[in-house]
Image (cartoon, rainbow, N blue to C red; front, side, top):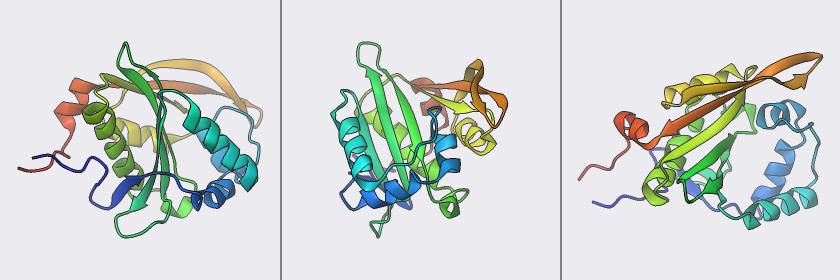
Length: 188
């Protein structure tokens, strides 16, 4: 049986919409969020700048962006993305952002990433996905390891924040590892 690659138990992946721009702009006003999301210096964006950033992301080849929303609503819970896809090698990078701290730690990140991984492996036929995470983000590290990602390397002291150097850790997940541990296949 063919399942809906965009639907999970509580969330669905959907296109980003114009209504998401103000929400994303609010997330990009939060310096703590920005320092978890990116190694670039934290820099707030207004709605116009956020709209331009989203449009630039959309135009990048090999980029697939999704809003993670509740099954019964349109609230933006998370932003997930596959990008930097190297089609000849069937690999790409993934990322997730949950800007509202009240939505973190509730299993939304795990479900959104499971949906994105299902899309990456079942729909795009990728063989490998990878990501980086900062050593000062233990919640994200636990999430990635729970999903089966393997720690593959460390960019030692790659990020400078608040007067200290922090590692940036590389994680990877191969198709066979994901298939061995996943429990999201639709029942026949």
